[in-house]
Amino acid sequence: MRFRYHYCTACRAFSKTFISILALYLECMFRPGAKLFICAPGKNQSAKIAKDKIYEIWDKLPFLKKEIIGDGNFGKDYVTLTFRNGSIFDVVGALDSERGGRRHGGLIDEIRDHDGDLLNSVVLPLMNVSRRTPKGEVNPNEPNQQQLYMTSAGVKSSYAYERLIDILEMSIIDPRQAFVWGCDYRIPVMHGLLDKQFIQELKMSPTY
Image 1 (cartoon, rainbow, N blue to C red):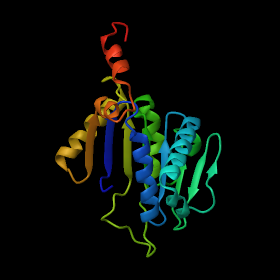
Image 2 (tube, rainbow, N blue to C red):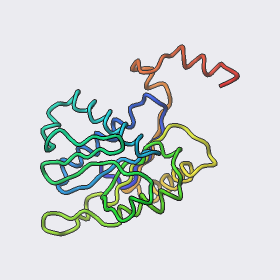
Image 3 (tube, rainbow, N blue to C red):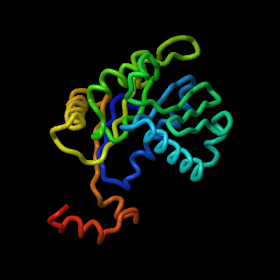
């Protein structure tokens, strides 16, 4: 993934988190010494999402498990994968206790439910330092401080919407740095992940 800023908004069952974690997993494989993370609205939620998706990845692509040392470290509020090339994928929370940590990029999952002030003061500063190659140099051709934002639909009066507009403007000014995309319920329906009749009933319901 060559973009530094990536924002996706789509309905549930679109597999956006699965695709994002798979992308970060592959980046850990291909960029030695990378430290990448997932951050959901709660640290327990982050750990559960990461564990579920990682096991799903291993189930569909079992050869990828050979890239990590051991079986991974999974707990109630933590997940850590240590790769054979020195990369690390783990979970962080938007908590004061995370201050001072260092990461090179990560996924902000369900940004619509995040506190924008905490993201700006705790999570984004984790990425201040760029990854260095084995020669001790920063590669200018890789997306340093990479930020992936994933979310279901939300409201306009939110930090998530402001960030969406921010990255959308970036994608117009410099399309090599930022990318925004979205999708509605028709893709999951097409692939049998959502029931078409159920969606139609929700659309017709005056109480929804």
